[in-house]
Length: 331
Image 1 (cartoon, helix red, strand yellow):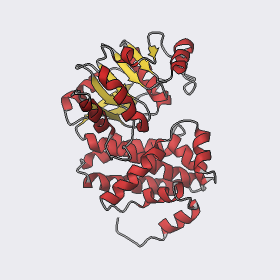
Image 2 (cartoon, rainbow, N blue to C red):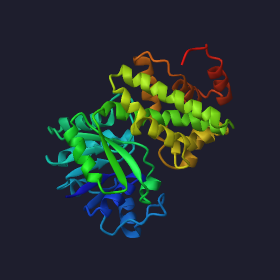
Image 3 (cartoon, helix red, strand yellow):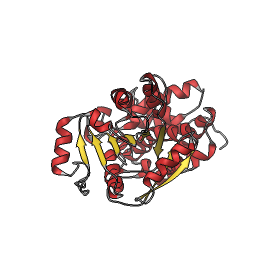
């Protein structure tokens, strides 16, 4: 069985290491030939210095080579590049291949989840391959070190989800099946925005009380929106929901948390993103999150607060005062 991973970032590399340790042939594709060549030669990812890439993993920048004979194709490029990458891969995807979306986001213009984006591009190429979402509290830095991690494999077709579950069985990643494909992906995208908010609070010097409250109320915002979109309530209290939000809002590995912290300390959005040096998915998810709030007429104060700070250059401390002085409500 061949596993192909599209995306040679930290998460794609960590997944490749994990699956290679189970004995699967793994090919990691990068759009950049120089990156593929360097990783193949040095066997260390610059952002995962403690992890050695097994010699059995191959690297390529050739899509036809990467897609050939793949049983699973894991899409692990940043969410804003998912459609472009799938469009490039689609002509080469074989009938047997199961697609796995391992990135987290919602397409800004269409409001499609990433599995919907994958299917859309495949259908344009005349193909009907299944797509499964994979999500949960999964920092690449820990998976690459073989630390116990739990994920959710989500698809309305639970048979396909179960195949992805079996793929990871026996690795450091313990997989669960969830039929709520949309709910899992709504959680995965919006928790990044909520984590930005918590990071901003930390940067302002606020404490654990504040952050715990924001995580709790943030999850409530996501839950209410998800229910309005027809998602399953149980999802929001599971690994892809509260589990992923907790780790993203609190971990030192979280780019969203760290970017928010820098903004709270007074740095501009551009300065914060530049200092992180990697993709901050909360920034990419914010436009879709705001549009969904408007579309479903949802009151989502924390997401709107991030919008005011990140897009409208509002002063973070002023936004906090507005949040604290909102009209009183029942929980």
